[in-house]
Amino acid sequence: MSNNVKKDINQIVKDILEDYQGDRAIDHVEVFDQPDTQVVTEMIDKLLTIVFPGFYREKAYRFYNMDNRLTVLIEDVMYNLNKQIAIALNQLPETADMSEEEKAEKAQCISLKFFQEIPKVREYIDTDVEAFFYGDPAAYNKNEIILSYPGLYAITVYRLAHVLQTMNVPLIPRIMTEYAHNRTGIDIHPGAEIGKYFFIDHGTGIVVGETTIIGEHVKVYQGVTIGALSTSEGQNLKGVKRHPTIEDNVTIYSGASILGGETVIGHDTTIGSNAFITSSVEANSRVSMSDNK
Image (cartoon, rainbow, N blue to C red; front, side, top):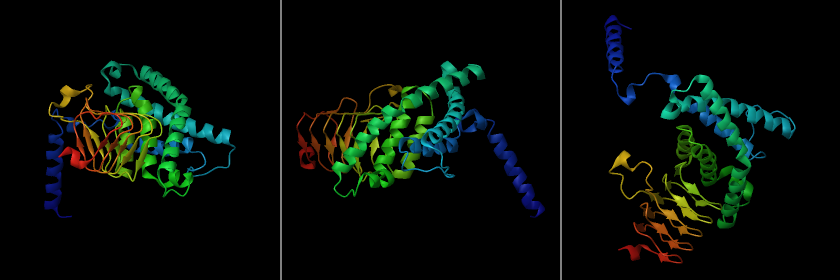
């Protein structure tokens, strides 16, 4: 490397370091003040092994009995989850000023409650598997769904993340669902409320917003958006219900957009492909693209 190039690099380093001195969000340099996304995503794989014990193996599989295997998994995930939650608590005004010991204690309490919810999460996921199997004639068996369907993967990660979201854990739930989004093309915000027997067919391009409420036995096809009607007011809308309510036994076909916090899709309704809906639909309705022209 020539002396001139070294000088140029030194100047570039100096310029960038000076640029870090601002007070912008992107100027944050304390790496260990943020949860580690890689650790969080690695936890997802281990949580899937807990949720589906006969379908996912650890990288170094050991022939423990189930009791020992599960104990090792839970202790492993809990150790990392405790650390990541304690770091994430720095993001909340009410916990940012706690001592490290207090944060660690609160993180441990949250982790324990999270794992206590796993049987309930599995109950919901089992109904999702049922919905996939009976809703998709192309499914060879339930094993195929668990091992290969992106829709079930996205729903499973969402259901785990949603538990942490309801416990007011910052950042980590969103990291989890965005990881699933990246893998599957399905974007489910961890704040959404989704009932049992949720079926995503094909899946790519689906968006489910933060304040969405979805009932039971709802079926959604690819390219569907359940979103906000307008976000022009930005942060002023925080905490406001911006996304629709979808009641039980609703089918939403590909490319449909259902928008707005006051929009309610009544039970036993079918929304046709590419429909654009910004107002409520009565129960037992059929809405097609021609109805929206």
